[in-house]
Image 1 (cartoon, rainbow, N blue to C red):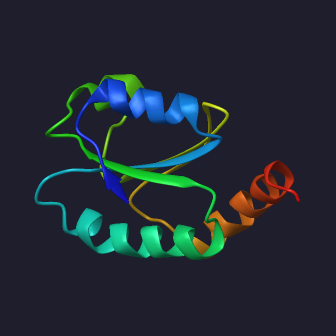
Image 2 (spheres, rainbow, N blue to C red):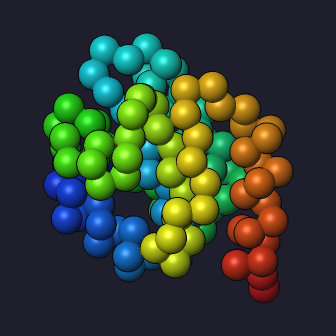
Length: 110
């Protein structure tokens, strides 16, 4: 996962890539620290065409207003610059996969 701290760079990544996973964490968040490597590995294995980026809300406070983030971690998935999926603290990778599989396979159909 590529770590970004500039809101403009985050916006650019979302706008210029077909699919982007934005992982937003907070400092001293044990759930954020435990979940990030699992999400990163899961998307790398199952959805390799999704660009994975992460940001810390303390380093980039504009994230809260830009994406209406109320708690961390927040996982946002964008296709064509539009938000498709939003997950919070209690994330089930299996349920997430069911939702992502359909659009990913349609979008990146060979």
